[in-house]
Amino acid sequence: MVDQSELKYTHEHEWVALEGDVATIGITAYAAEKLGDVVYVDLPEVGTTVASGRTVGEVESTKSVGELFAPLDGEVVEVNDDVTSSPELVNSDPFGDGWLIRVRLSDPTAADSLLTADEYAGLIGE
Amino acid sequence: MSDRLSPLHRIHEDAGASFTDFAGWRMPVRYSSELAEHHAVRTAAGLFDLSHMGEVVVLGAQAAEALDYAVSGRMSALEEGRAKYTLLLADDGGVLDDLIVYRTGADRFLVVANASNRELVASELARRADGFDAQVFDESDDVALIALQGPKSPEILAEVEGLDVTDLEGLRYYRFARGSFRGHEVLVARTGYTGENGFELFLAPEAAPELWEAIAETGAGSGLLPAGLAARDTLRLEAGMPLYGSELSRAIRPAQAGLARTVDLTKEDFVGRLGVEPPADAPVLVGLAAEGRRAARAGYPVLADAEGGDPIGEVTSGALSPTLGHPIAMAYVPPAVSAAGTQLFVDVRGTRIPASVVALPFYKREA
Image (cartoon, rainbow over all chains, first blue to last red; front, side, top):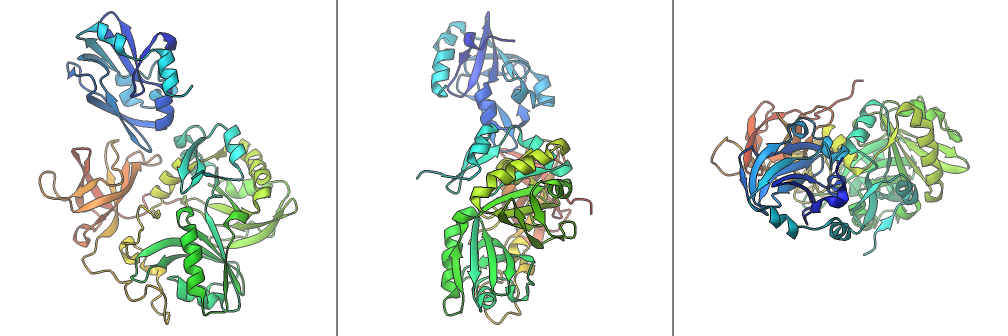
């Protein structure tokens, strides 16, 4: 279980857990709750180069479609096949088993520019 | 504009519901999981708050005649205690709203309208009743509406303490009965918008919280869940039922939506009669079924071919069907490609996904 206060966050309601130069990325509980029951997750292939702010996938619920944005520049090194086959993990454990992709960052220090837990809490009004 | 709140709002808040703004109302979109709520309605029961819907009463010696003129069907032929699905048409035959009309007396009808069209329906009915011995009252603010839907609805409703309805077991589809709940009048109708067996209960707003809690408590052991608008939408989609604003609009003639049967052309005169027949090449509503998990959604283009060509139609509603497990959608397409089995394509955010025309409804409960 990750410590949510240690994570970085984005304005697109994604969380980023940094370990060395690899970032694990998912969507926040707030985003999952807003989407509703997630029924389809489309993730990029391993090896895909991603650029900060660009769409790299989709998280789709019965009611709406959310885009997955790359929070930082880098290369996809792992994707969570479990959420592809069991999209409901995004709702049941958004900060754990519902993680989406791992990206090797071109510049790990760029993560400093993301929101802190407190800043994100302010963004969603908590 | 501040949102209107249902008389059940406090109960929904206490239940942890998420809310959405719907036609000026703040209504529950889901309580926990819209999929769980959807499945509960298909396998057990779901409880819906529909207090946002409009209730308009038409009353008077010529109420039936006034309605015959005002709506598409023949309401004068409706027997007391029965309900009928009908349409409010514009002069040019376009659909202004779809309605359920309940004949509550020889000279009295209850017209249930979509929340978004409540004012329009009330004012149009009043205008059209002018010249008849009939009066129109918008009673929406004085009526709450609770729907209990799902195969276990009859046994749950029969067990609700304090609810007294004559011959509930004998109540057939599209009929209603009068009853009482702890001193309050209740109209219990076997109608609904989910494709399941179920009931809609009309009563005074002040009595609604108590009835809601009594039904929820009675049904809890049977798997009943409170259900929000998200589940209601996927349920009605599976049942092939049109939604005003999606499948129905001012620009659509009834026959295009497969609703020609709701228009009684043998009536002498009614509003919309002259324009009610669409041109032969007007788009028609079809069901589309696809494989995989990516759903077509409202507004997505429908195409004839896997590559190239301009869109030939547009999706009006779509979702990954919770019951069937594959994507379903409704769309308007040209009549030439509307036959069941026709292979079409939907542009799902840049990817063309094959979709077959299928007969509606997608889901039909076992009789």
